[in-house]
Image (tube, rainbow, N blue to C red):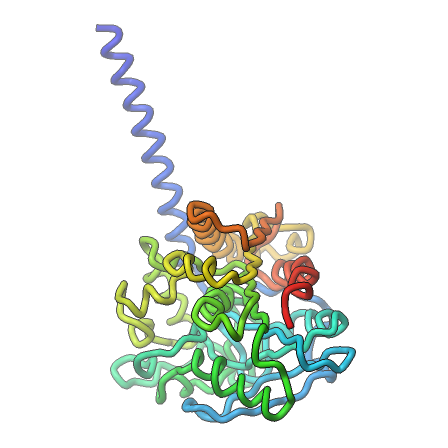
Length: 363
């Protein structure tokens, strides 16, 4: 009898531990979905001197969405063969890329003789080709950010600062723009090499960077993802992204792709991982620990919001890591720093860590 009771007790404890683990995961997901997403988490982690960089110039290119601006920063040695695209986050601004506004990465990349292309705008787009305008029943849902982009935001927080009709009154076609319209214009007007480029991004842009490399390997031989959502078909992820996209300008995720159909799965790095291996794409994949670092200590609100968002990105990134390992991948470097929440300080630091590897594998 004692043995039976012992087994029951052990079984009960096992169930309790499993329940506790499930509860922790559920709380994490709930925090990521339910936190008020309208406040910036860029905070003190952003480089104080970063803002408009006079070394860059505006580069307008026509598209099916209308004219789209990019900011171009030329390599220090004047070459046109080494090119990298820097993709923004969920609340991409309409006047300037978050990478330019919040960091100094353009200056550092150009010192390494790399030309930098920063597309501007595309909040909530995932840089994808959508099926339809991202409004709700034809209604203009407005923008959660300031019209002039005065607030400094991160991937899911801050201000979009974008013409709220773009992507709502027409249909986002960002993948086509980046891989056709912009690519051709950079080649024809600036002489940039259209092949063997790099691409990196944060959060939404991190997921998109891997997608672009998977389906356009001739253009992108290198891709970097920082705090990316790399397992978007995992339970709860679509609804988490739905809430984030509503907050980041009122966009309707159902206009991007139907749930769990071929188009949605095409956007999931966990699903298309074999392509990245088959292409031989050089990858840099990173996520912070969701523990704040010294630079975050003076901003408790930033920590409150940036911590669960980074934890969600970390879970997604670790799942992608396991997936790649089961496929025998040897083409990826992982970076999991001991501190880092969902903010620009974390992402800027990651670019600096990546640059030597990027420089050795593009052009």
